[in-house]
Length: 97
View 1 (tube, rainbow, N blue to C red):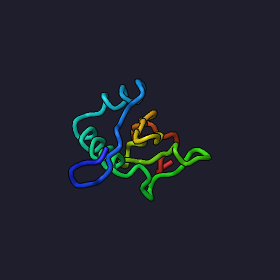
View 2 (view 1 turned 45 degrees about the vertical axis):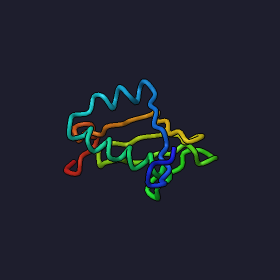
View 3 (view 1 turned 120 degrees about the horizontal axis):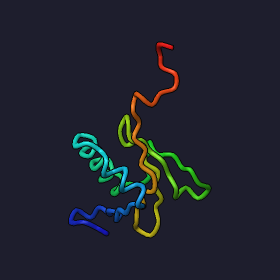
View 4 (view 1 turned 90 degrees about the vertical axis):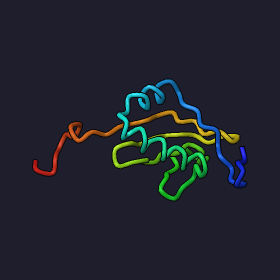
């Protein structure tokens, strides 16, 4: 879809699992998440993203320091299929160990 400014914006969809993880974010995390998704919708292939498939359409990126998403790009659509939220309590070995 092309907006008023002529910039193509991809439609964003979520798997059930990804939407559930998104919906569990607190207000501050959700605001940062939404900003990151809006940026991806305008450019789903930023330099910071990495391909996780042979075709390059399946990608991963850390939207924030604590939120990683995996997504696929196809026919003007951006499908978010994994949302991972990191928490410092989830670390096996800490810097002080």
